[in-house]
Image 1: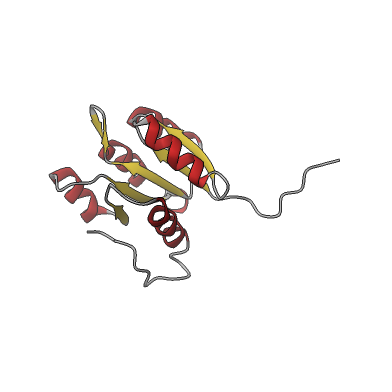
Image 2: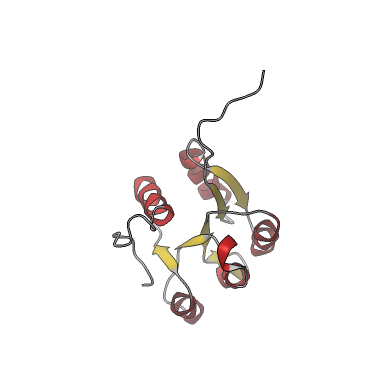
Length: 139
């Protein structure tokens, strides 16, 4: 007997150095998405180089590094395999403002409610069907 899967879950990479946050977000999303969790910029870069994701949920502040390293790696990818990006805990630093100017990036500032996160992810993943969504695009 083989297993039957009705619909493949979209692959989402969560880049979050706070274990509590990544655990809560993971639990909230695991029924709907195929999740990979990276706790550092280096781990996230390895993940996007080795797997294909539809979306990356990227914490901008990752301990001693910055989400810009991950975003730069994503931006260098072939356009056909480039995932959409949602950035959290952005703030107003120069590197974030530069990132918002260079690519199609959606911003979800922390703190956020899990319902807001789920809605944003849904909108980002369906943006081709709903180009005029209310997501916070390129703030």
